[in-house]
Length: 225
Ligand code: DX5
Image (tube, rainbow, N blue to C red; front, top):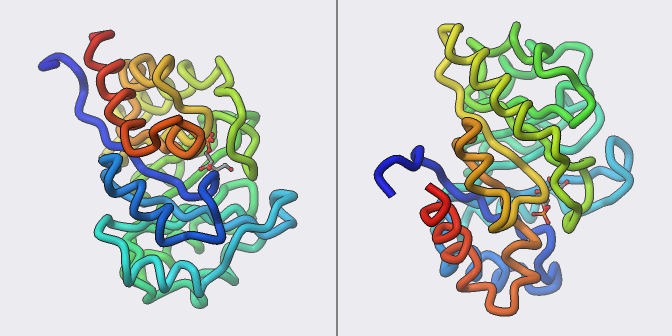
């Protein structure tokens, strides 16, 4: 256990029952998630539509866990003022969705939140380097964004290690998130490669006992160390 890098789980309610959101939030809490991630899908940057600012506001009111928002939207600039002040501590947006990512980072930070930068699997990891000193988090997608329940792409481990190396040679102390496809059989290798936060959705909600799901992944990580 002692030689496992410190890590956290973010529970994503995307694969939960969206007609019973408070129950999905409760399941993430009981399962032992360290934070909640709310996935905003706009039907444009990604083909799916999930939910919007009212769900973010209500979730922040009822959640016992810190809440981060993952914007899978075109024109993230437009979303910052609408989403600010709802109680989330961090907003993650996609580098691919903006031509002025540095400005988006500034807008998020000025609104009193941490900025996170997400990149899709086909975006070179070197693309995050210029913004590393200005963001709190790099979110590496392990899948094509927009859908829960996909398989982690094998290239993800190398990408995590590459971003870890970039962070270590820069003045940045950004954390690394892996989002998509995280399960008991790949979590240890992701932590080993340098991930700090693992987002889990179907791994929780498609588990026969959702409340026990994250404990099982933790045990797998410990066992593999
Ligand atoms: C996908 C979302 C993920 C997703 C992960 O676009 O960003 O958070 O919910 O789902 P799983 O864990 O099922 O891959």
